[in-house]
Image (cartoon, rainbow, N blue to C red; front, side, top):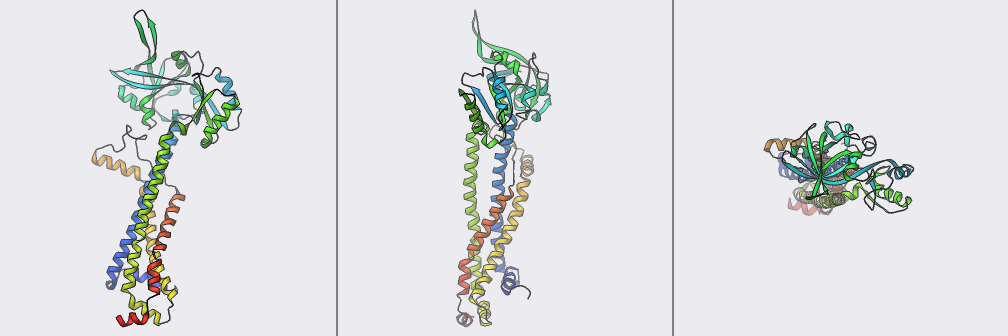
Length: 415
């Protein structure tokens, strides 16, 4: 044989033959157990990665990397602050915004919203809200007009579209002879955006900076500046450094802080899932122990004959270690292939299931995204495969040592 005899015999023990069909069957079960555990681990972690990445990208599409605002609610001179920010090497862009709270009313429906005033020309440098517009044109928001952009779910709730009129009520009130009357203003819907994040699509409206400044009576002062930074993972440090450079007296925030609880929960959930599912892989790998123990017991005669022909104890140990490793390697290979395939198409699979059962599995009211995302990380897949192979190799140690210690004379006498 061109290959080592241990490998040739190990392959014969794995292949199905009428004389050892049961051994081959339990070997197949061990392979499928490892394959299933590895595939599940890859799919679950890929979906978790997808949730994290999708939320991060959509969040950064609707808001900036970081913000800096005054403690009093407004910046005295946002233009000077913006120039100072742009002078920093770690800040790529900056844009002013006005922010407030209100309620919108149309067609006998009402909803609470967060109001944001932006300068469309500067806004595109810090966020990609324009890319989420599904109807109308957000660039039509202009000074001196009362146009507004709303989320797709809010539009569905109010039953409005581009060209329709909605009324915005503010928490502030006007004093009249009849008492306090909530301030309100009619707006024309200019555009509808759909970010896929329920929080924004249902609870946020966007208007021009000048309109928001007049509405909230800020005197053309901005609530703060939105920043796009060079390193999004250092956004908090960049904003803090800018605040210190400006002399302090500012409130800073960043994309991760605004959704800190959710991002932290994703990381914790991923770690817990990885540990739990790794234990399942471990259990599946140790099925190899029972498989090899049965093979060693079944093949005592073969072991004795091989030892009689000069095979060493080390050779026997290698034979059964190779068999167990082959079982694990084949199972891991199948698991990786199936896991990557399912993870890559999990969105289509979920959409098919939703159509089949006629039910929305991922409602925007319960989840921050309305579809199941997935992101396969090659390095993570390689780590899973390596860990599963290592567990399979460890599982071969006891049966292989047991085979190496088989006394040939006693085995032949019992045969």
